[in-house]
Image (cartoon, rainbow, N blue to C red; front, side, top):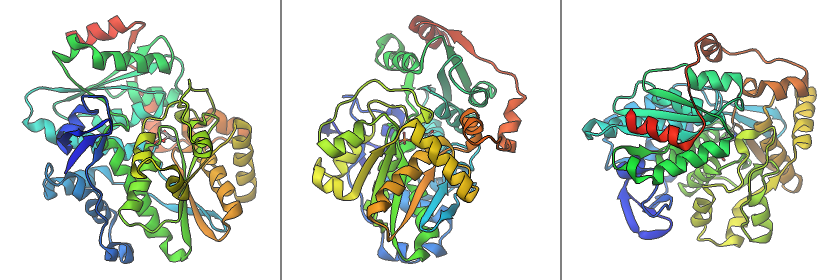
Length: 431
Ligand SMILES: *Cc1c(COP(=O)(O)O)cnc(C)c1O
């Protein structure tokens, strides 16, 4: 299949080169030329299919010219070796737990799928590919883990010194091999600015093949549609109309869910739940898109002031606001409301939500107020232990640290401390 730039439909490329480049030459996001619905029987009999089979059938049309079926199956086996349970916590309210992967963040699936694709593609490329990525916390760990040991690919991760949690820092600084951590004296915005500058720096790009590993990259974005299919398989027997509520930052995850709907998955509605970074909720009400600097919140993986994937969602609905409103609602919530929801759900049901999942829960409840006869699923995007301080302070309890996190806690941190773009540049030119 070919992919075209959302800035200019005449700029086209294959899946392979969309993955290697990350973004189109005109800085547009790549989008698949077509989305062909899966056969009706696929959804009718989905409970008879394994997760690997579901994923294979769903992603095949997007990649098949560049990845042979046998290789794709292997990639999916490497990517999907953990569970995605739907857990009911109240009547008509369930959570889809996406935190059972190696770094306990939902980004594990996208990062591993992309790493495996890039590893396969770089077998016949002579030049090493360098993945350059800025992280405010969770992306770094998932990318580091996904790309560890992939031949022909080097990963350089920039993170703001002192501004990620201990667990997150260990996850991205202790692996070694082809993973390098750059500890930046500055904020996440500084890290992101350095990465963007490097992509535009011809002295670097003349020598190095750089790509990004955020959800702009189609190989990180598209596999997220699996989650919604896995949830559908588990919730189908409810025989009620399904609603998904997705805690959203860059809007890649929810956009992938909307692609699953285009593939024919029966779903009534999507809810994009945000923290006070409310550019999209405002747009959905008023029709004007006003990006602004991000505001820090307790659900910090969603502190995004100009969500990169929202253009893909608008494009799915031909930039027509009223059609989009039929399929998508978007609501914003404060930290106070988020903490109150964490407390209430814990005291009523015993379930411990992390702050991101709690925003998703709130979005679902708001929608269900006017649509009570639906079955709602909100996505839990991180294990509560990843946001330990907030969970401890809000609920007065300490979730047990799972083995995959304990494993990295004892390892030695290795980072390169930098305070300027020039330091990053010399590192990239010399290594
Ligand atoms: C990245 C992230 C999100 C936001 O996902 P998007 O696809 O960027 O909307 C939500 N929760 C957690 C825990 C995350 O790490």
